[in-house]
Length: 136
Image (cartoon, rainbow, N blue to C red; front, side, top):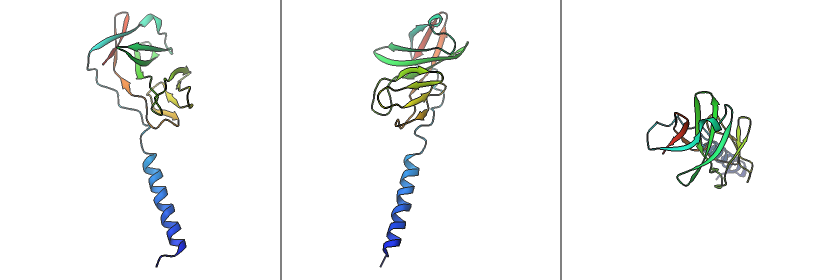
């Protein structure tokens, strides 16, 4: 017959295991997406300075753009992975959700601060002359 102590120890061990599994890699950044899909105009490159961000609507959906250097533009969904609020452009290296305070890295979309459980979905981009395009 199990003792009260053994039941409590087993419960604590099971709870710890569930916690570790639920904290897995949900906030981990996605791999760089393949440059496939149809390109859609997102913004003029001149309107997105280096270290600048922009919130754009393309094909009826919201996206966040970040230009970390002269040659690169990164694109993410603007939909928070917590409860679907619209994530703002934030400041510095962080996108911020105004609803519950989740923060995401502008460099890879990973969760910096929850309650968001997953990183922002990332989309391939290309610079085509004066235009930044998102491949969807």
